[in-house]
Image 1 (cartoon, rainbow, N blue to C red):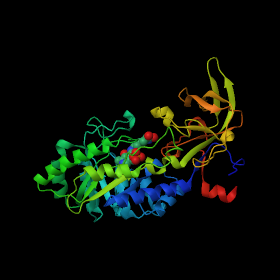
Image 2 (cartoon, rainbow, N blue to C red):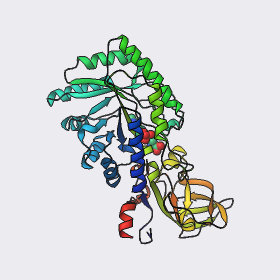
Image 3 (cartoon, protein in one colour):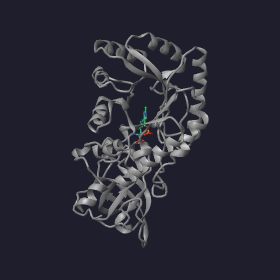
Image 4 (cartoon, rainbow, N blue to C red):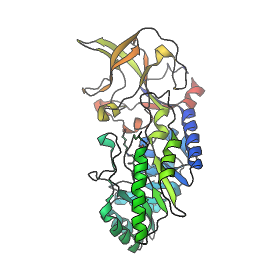
Length: 394
Ligand code: LLP
């Protein structure tokens, strides 16, 4: 694939890998029973990516009116949309009600009351799951932990029965079940087993109170291998579903819903950047790129590691391409052009000797890359391309 005529930086989405990932995901879900998958669109809302995901037939998880609109525009049926978030505005709730979305994941009493009131005004009934904060530690970065008692998300366990009772009293609310989400980039499957155990205790409590639910939504959070993306381009969906299948004690007729984002799109995206300068500092050697934290903020925001390849040297554009033998290696701090000291992609990275004009690929940028981009320093947004498009054109 020759993309020498394209302006850098740009996002490159490997749509073959995405399709393969979706096939493995849906096959694994089918092996483990009654599982409904919703793609967490917050990870990547690029219309070209959404089109491929929609073709796989899975549903969608939204956290704003903008995401609901993006999902509808991409052709996802409203009946596959779940809508979460601690701060849903009246306008966003009305949008969801207007399209009769599958379910609102509700996070507080005032929100429940507002949905009831707006649904009443519109002559609708809202399907609702209550998001419970299960106080389970996700063993991940603090900034992407959501299921601890101290986090702003969900309803405290102590308030659960009171809220269910309220939801069942309200005329325009249909209580369908419970929703959980304990965090993101979770690589330790025991977190999902612990969450299952907690859900089992909760179900026992609800049984004792004579409350039956149809839906258990366990959220998302399955992590990807940022250190060795070529070695693990597709996450182990079987191990993920097995953690729930083996631990969750379902009652008759119950549906399990999951909301996966990163694990679906993460490995299919690379941020492609050109090296502008190689600079010898007092103690460091810098490879200064034309992409910066405005295009991929994860290293600056979460200390996240993204694997970097010098694809001019290796010739391996995609994760599936075999790299050519490379000569001498040197260490570089790979940095962007933004006026911030945190604009560093990685430090002391060992790379095949880098020269001005070389093209680097920052891997695993398909999730929370393009969607978190900013225009800081008045930079234009990097453009997205898919391998489907480039194969046709280049
Ligand atoms: N469901 C809910 C309620 C969520 O809050 C999230 C992510 C997901 C599903 C999808 O989680 P995933 O499967 O992608 O882990 N910007 C951060 C990640 C923030 C995740 C927020 N919530 C990052 O770049 O690591």
